[in-house]
Length: 281
Image (cartoon, rainbow, N blue to C red; front, side, top):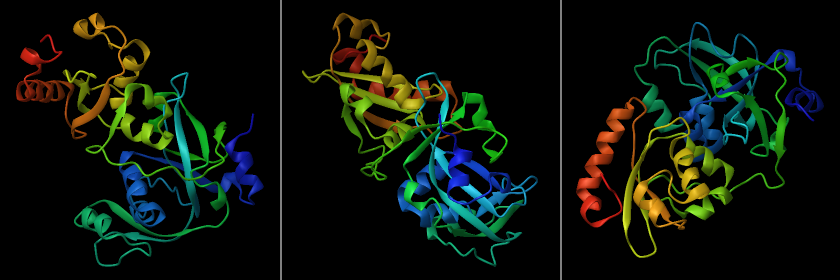
């Protein structure tokens, strides 16, 4: 078993002098959209009191990875930055790493500190190659941790550091049987959001469902991969079929389960799947 703090030592850094930051879905979106440039700008803005950087000068950054077999959360390493400067964000002085979309969203925010960050070469060869075990789902609330206080097991070291770019939620289409073969970053993206989805049988019949649980679309679709019906009565009668899955609508982060179910009902009415599809209600 190999731990991340051992990797940090091998690349010449001190685990006690850095923070491990597992960023939320906004960080994942920035990384997928613009790599180190967009993400670097995203990470240059942090709420104060307390700052996730905790006064240190080094930070190892991660984005959410897929849920592991035992239910633990994982984190994908995307690089290490040095913190060069910190100041109260007023919108006047811009950080060294700039991205127009990120800067636009940060304008007007209060109680935020801005940082000048610099990507370090140490460990750059392992970007998107190291997947570590962050801990049980509740541990993701502690998204900033000291590098030497929690042993983070490396559960995967990839040969190829790059995966095909995620096509986006509106363009994503796959067979149920293909989901387990999707790049881990795709699975992480699909597991990070909730909303309304569509199943299409080989004969063209349609089923509208909603994913409102913790693991988002991936969590819901794993049920179809396992048994073909996900607990639905009409789908159970059709036995195990290899449906095509796609996303009709991504829910906003503040939507409740009831809100998502209401959007599911909207799409059922719009597509007529109760009368002519596979939805019983």
